[in-house]
Length: 246
Image (tube, rainbow, N blue to C red; front, side, top):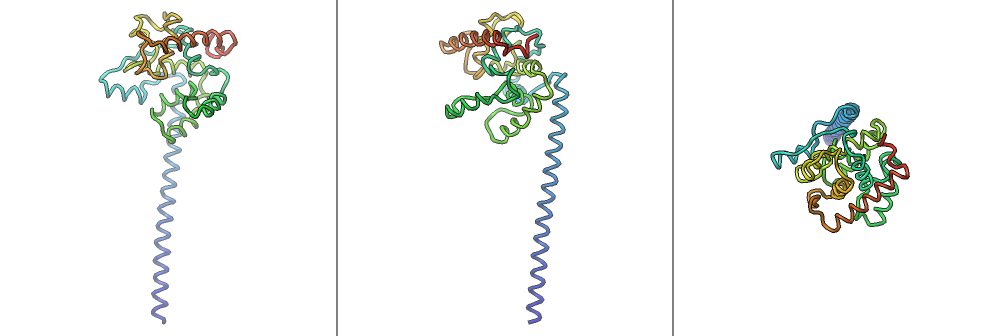
């Protein structure tokens, strides 16, 4: 009986030792996960502060396209050298309430949910976060990161800076990024010289720049461009362009 009791005691000690090792391993992983998360947050904050005044040198999408195609077309220009109608057209097309929200357009999200998620509700700020700090594609991880990063960008950057970055990093065609490179490639002019129709047609292809043509627009693209021109005039008249125009 004493031997059996001794074996039971030793068995319990072994089980307790194993449990302690497992608990220790879990605690170690949690500590390291927390350290990695804090380090990632610190790097993000440094980049947010840096990119408030320094132009992002490259994005994941630009780098991916450069690897795939061997070259990309991109030329950064300050927002002062971009036609005001181009800026208004992009806002009218992508995020008409850009000046009114702090990163998330609740009304657009509600409309998207009512439509069964068939259309997007991402704001320009969210798209900047995705393009500059994250990656393309649909995943809950990316969306969660985007959702947590967006308010930070809104707090640190001005609306004008957010739009400036967007106009310079948005994909505007196969291997083409930013409105300056697009204006030169498609129209043979600078972004500052684009006409209202040219600006509206460029804004019209942004949801799918690889599949829609600026120089040979479909009937659907032409109609969307006409609607964008009306929208650009509307947001200028009602003050929804004031936050990014001098």
